[in-house]
Image 1 (cartoon, rainbow, N blue to C red):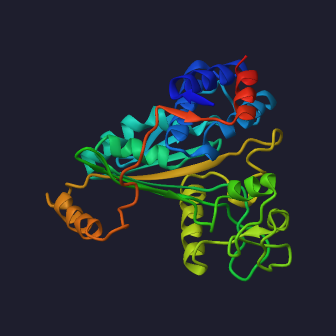
Image 2 (image 1 turned 45 degrees about the horizontal axis):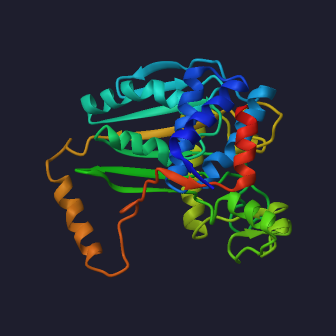
Length: 324
């Protein structure tokens, strides 16, 4: 059925507040849920709402806490989520971080001890909305094995980058450093479908097309050793720089019970005009070369933002139940 994004946000807000989140915290997360649906990112949208609600009830995420924002150094902002929602911890620190970037040319924002941020690009596009280049990193529960291995060590550990343009985003990407997001495998299992070779290995470290075997084994990195290096980079920045947990120390992100996630996100914000005024010209030079090739595009170009989306009946019934 078709559902308006405004209703998705309001139903998400009602579900979150009904399960113990404060109004400010719930609004911040509900906006993120609606934005994910508007961009067709179903895994990070309503699909995640039940998990948020269950973990609010169990206490795995703290729905009423206010983050503590500090300035360790002039170009550094830290937002301690105190085991609350990452969306809210980012929101309350964004102004201080962007102001610092405009003053210094570059600044970093560390979000520490947070619930999963779900869609990392949701945050970097907000940085770009302030006129700054935004790069983000985060980690997750361990599902990715090292090349040649069979035991998970790091999470899907996404990287996102958003570049502002004259009319919205000039470039935007948000992808896991694993070959695929874990949700793609769980969705394949639910649909009774095989997965492509190159997504995962089984418990013995052998490539598999069986989603069950993959879920009992591990994902692999995109591009082998190259993706593994990017995944480790995200791990060190998200956990090491923020003082948050390693992927190895996080239980399943959607498990209803257990200790809080305690994850970190690390953002780099840059003023493109810090050193010279030709950034836009340099970007346009590349974009033109891409545009001249049929079928090629800059990442994030021509993104379609929907005002209403198709929601499976069973999922919408669950949302109505949660929001009641």
